[in-house]
Length: 401
Image (cartoon, one colour):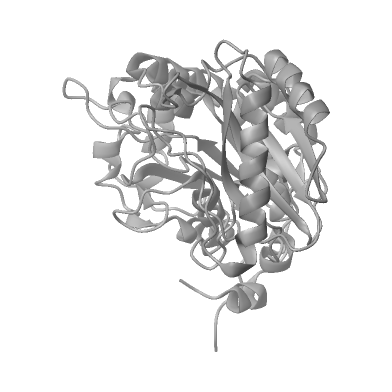
């Protein structure tokens, strides 16, 4: 892919509006012969596909299953191999926590273990956000400091929370304490570098004390931590692409990665209609918008095929409201595939459509995996999306003589 230095040198400003609609976990696998997208009734997306150029996108590289962080970095035009950013930093930024160079952040799940220490439910039944807040207060009141390291615990949504360790001598070379699957024993974090040995001791003591405080809880009786990370140095989208970017997302992680690359995060409600309203309200103030839709990924991870179908269909219902804004360039895709039959992220490429005045339309008539496989964009890495959007917005100068 082209370098950051080159993008800086050829990017230019103009008032054209670019919109990236990210349907989380979009791609799927067949159940009874059809994927979720193929099962969907999505007339608006299908019509838009006939007016666009389509293809398939690999978030990282063929065969590589991505986390949400690297897959979004790639969507925004950053090399996800060069910038390896832990989930903890993204979650912390997403809920508005201020990080310094001495801080170590981790994403947490409340979880359920049985009497043998086997994880029964990594998400503690997706407890309510209100219950989450109560549990975070319980932990914060019981664990304020460990070995001179200040501990700050902030709730996220449902079962998710963020813990921030503040102190000297912390390092982020640590393995997760989350085995990522039910039916496995809970595990300790482990240092992968000498500089993280102190962090290992602090974190495992925190996990032990937190589990003790949660011992009487029916479902959320332990915690799982992952994505141990410290704040990285990364150029902003404005520096690289000469755009004024904004993000509309509900969940903290996605707000966090948007803030990390210099986007203004616009407040919106919980529903798609609220996100579209925020887009409409701020449309005159920015020239790049990232709109994130979470529900399809949630249903995919729960193995709920028909729930994911309904969630994608809901996005389709609101597409005319989005199109009424008449963006100059529109991309619809996913950050990664979350097939319901796998109940997890997967390595499968996502469908993508690109709409602008300057495209060559192809023969694709439906927005699904098999149809987009035949599209004019072919199959390409997600890092290529931003240059395509900028080019179609006429924001890239000619390269070379």
